Length: 221
Image (cartoon, rainbow, N blue to C red; front, side, top):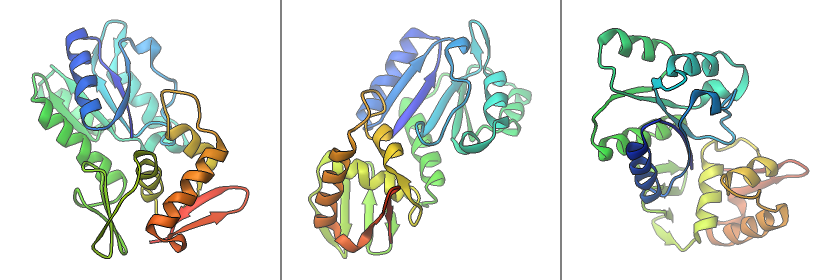
């Protein structure tokens, strides 16, 4: 999963990127409002960590712009991280569409827990164990079970399964998977995706992943 971090403090930015990496999350770190994308898209970004006080603008303006955009951007979880602790600021952030509001200084472990919480909510899961029919997925442990049996899946296969599990029963296109499987590098080749899907089917059960010809794949759970 991929996190967009917008934070101008060098020490905090480096620390957060390291913590995200330990959690198994990729991240892109920006330090100025002008460098922020015009839109955030749920097909490429799983969560945004947004500082309110930036050297060239306000995080409130970015929050408003993204929440007012049409399409997928309104669905991307956004966590505000800021030193501004006034009740008015917290209300403005939450009422403006932020999913959570964390005041600096904070414990990194707490922020990671809050990220996991908003990611669970976006995937409509109530706990760290994602239960989809006979499948149980534990993102933090990179573990998969079916009918109680532990399945041996590779990191890439696990990443692919997690992307399909975010919206079970919904077709995920190959182009979306191509970007999401390596958000910081070159898009993954479609042929490689087909190989990973084939291997994953063999391990979790071929009937659980359906091909929608010419479009992509969906998880049936």
